[in-house]
Length: 205
Image 1 (cartoon, rainbow, N blue to C red):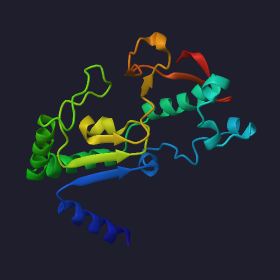
Image 2: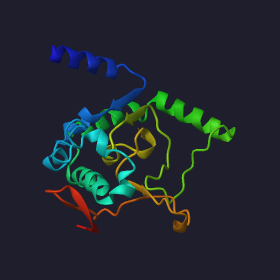
Image 3: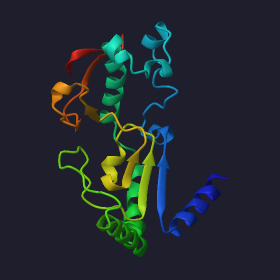
């Protein structure tokens, strides 16, 4: 049954004009990352009676920052320390062969160019943006609920839409920051998290 389903999927993709890739937690799981149901299943949280939906609340940032950054910091570390699975490379090859340079892709870009000239949309991004979009997507798009930012390792920024954002991007909430916008954490940065308590310290590891 699985082989028939894969064959049917391959036939549909090969005959498609546009490929919209929609991914969720299961796609990250193939890289070895925990899905939402399991990411908070550790003894430190069980001892406090905390489930995933309890920890993913913004008030922890003020009430107990060490807990907030311990959870999200460990997620950040795991995402950075885990390589995307081979499926990303496979999908990128499909996109390159069939969808980025096709006639339909050229037509889509032409429509977007025309809309910009008409002032309907503004596509330019600031050079300060973490993921600078310097081109238009063709006929391949990726829409994901994953926050690991692994799509950016293989696909182009113009092709990706993250409905939940990702753990790579940060923004200051204080007016004293001077409107510095959104930035990406330094590539060599890791959070210092005590694996026994799952609490973060103020120092980076």
